[in-house]
Amino acid sequence: MSIETKDLEKIESRTANLYESIVVASKRSRQINDLLKMELAQRLEPIIAKETEDDTIMNQDKLNISLEFEVREKPTLQSLDELMDGKLNFRFKEQE
Image 1: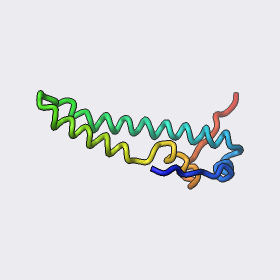
Image 2: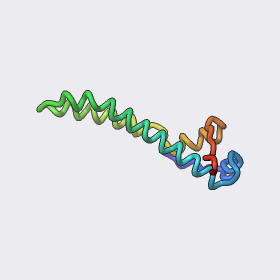
Image 3: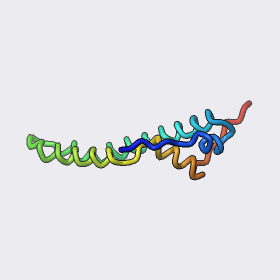
């Protein structure tokens, strides 16, 4: 997988400053990562539940699922792309 550079000025243009953009993208990245973890657990649950002594078939199923998740776009890149495309809505907490 090649490394893609991101233009910091474009990232900064989405919020008031670069640091806010990074915080927004990192929070979204954590949300995406949590969703991926839940999806992985749901897909592995039936396989783990019916494991028997014949683990070779089950291990292959687990391996196929984990390889599928491995080739997906990383949550960090996904969140930055959402921010850059304007698909990410955010707001700040109201100060008391």
